[in-house]
Length: 357
Image (cartoon, rainbow, N blue to C red; front, side):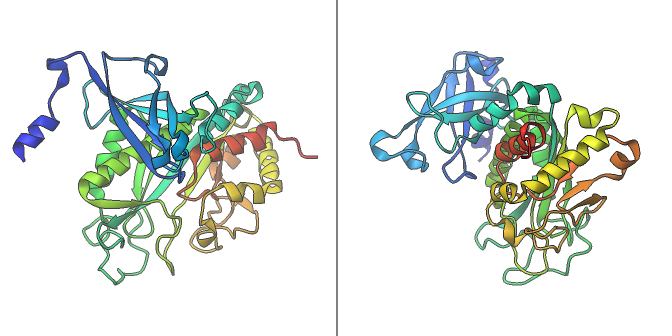
């Protein structure tokens, strides 16, 4: 195993100018991450310098077998924490051979919204709180839980310490450092209310980059759990009963919200969100009805609500925002398995572009 480890840690810059680009994309389920590596003649500094590539879409539920070639377009570059050196991870989206975005290409749809001049002028900032659950590989039961049984009730686990409270901290810290190395603006981590469940935060990130960074952070986490022999779940309610679900709370502000008088702009935006509540819920993640029950720090899925410092509301406004009269708000409805391209662009479209009739 030492030889294998030595080979995995080879420093390529000592022997060649060539680098490895790992092309990463989202598969047909909308949550499965796919990737494959390609040798490039030398380092690159922007996505346009990376060649487009293709994959077999019939094997990812993204194309029929008789016309299976799907084209990857490089969109964002990150440093590769696994191969290191000058090697890179490349976030891609997918197109047909004639250049049309495939139906599952939510990045293309989001970019159309984020490139609208009215949205660009508002500089939308996002901070996404991505919750996830670590599962034992062979039994698909939360890490640290007795197989077929349950740990002590919730209470000591949130931000907890100790072998009987924090399960998987090495994975979490490895992911934290790997994201910082990659260039992802990961802003923090913490243990969550349910044991075996954790959270990382990405942001502030502007526009389309929020989706790129969250997806790449998910990819890196999946690679780390793969190496650790642990399964990763983004299910919004992995364990039924008196256990917290998993969300992806989305913090949001525009330039107008961050400027003096911004609280009034925030209230108008929240009013718009209330009018499109059902439309947003449909796009905020599969199985979210199992999580948004009105219990465990959630609002009921059928009723829109907002409040200051209220974690049981659909939308929360912070005390600091209320006090300063400007700032941001938190949409607490998105599930852990939401598509950040969909959620971020939808919030921008509703609050900036949409005009209620």
